[in-house]
Each structure stands twice: as C-alpha cells, then as structure tokens.
Length: 184
Image 1 (cartoon, rainbow, N blue to C red):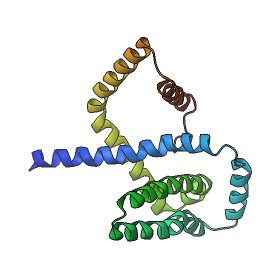
Image 2: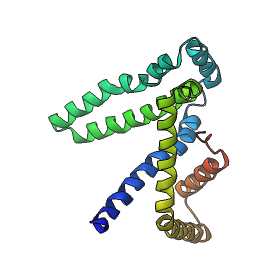
Image 3: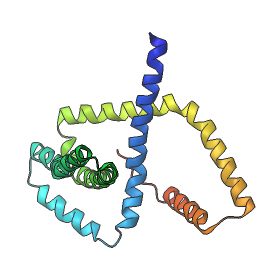
Image 4: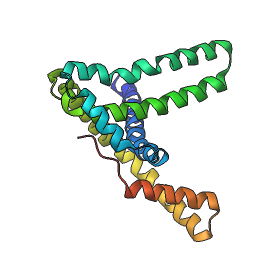
C-alpha cells in the first residue's frame, strides 16, 4: 500500500511547490508589470484603513479576494458548460493571476494582525512546515533536472541566441536579483 501512496505524495508535494513558486516569483512579475501604480501609497492607505480593526475583522479583509473573484469563477463554470473551453481557461488563468496579486497584497498588509489569531498562526506555521517538507521531498528529483536545464542554457548561450531567448535570460536574471520578500 505504501508503494502506491508514494506517487500520490510526490504529486501533492509538486503541486504545493508549484503554488509556492508561483507565489514567490509571481510577486516579482506582478511588481514589474504594475510599477506605474503607486503601491507604497496604496499600501499605506490600506494599512491605515485596517489599523482600527480587530484581528477578526482583519481576517474578513483577508478573505475579500476570494469573495471578489467568485463571480469570475462562476463565469468560468458557465463558459465550460457552454463549451467555450478556451475562453474558460483564459478567464481562469486571469482570475488566478488577479487572485494571486490581491491575496499577496492583502496578506502583506494584514499579516501582523492575522498572526495575532492563534488558529491562524498555527495554520500559517503548518503551511510553512508542509512547504519545507515538500521541498525536501522533491529536491533530490529536481536538482538533476535543474542541472540539465543549466547545461542546455549554457549550450544555447555558446551557440548564439535570438532576441526572445535573450529576453528570457534577462527576465530570469532580474527575478534572481530582486528576490520577493519571503513570507516570514
């Protein structure tokens, strides 16, 4: 039985790490795309709005992105039922990106108050522990793949590159230079 559960655990760990990777690197990408928005001023204004709220009220603010994106997700289901798969997947990807951005923003402004709630703090610590477990489980499998990718990229760089590839290399190096603030 244990032999059959191992692939399930590996798949679960991979899915969890994919979400964590999107969270970590998505912040950088979202920040690069929306640099024109005065985020610092918006962030300070939002922090001032939630300052008088108790931690329980802050939890409601943190749940706001889920409520705001619910109509989009219902629309995705409707599109699937109508057979418009491409539109549904496009809208779902858009909703996922917007949800990531809103959740990251609200978590950033609500983190301190949310961690005052003992249940939320325990859940947060458990999520961090699961993330570490997933990373430890997949690292032995991921490292050989990373090494192969590095070798291929070096081979392509030696051979000469096109404009698109140079853009990807610049984007990857920018993402590495500006690491997103890790969730503490």
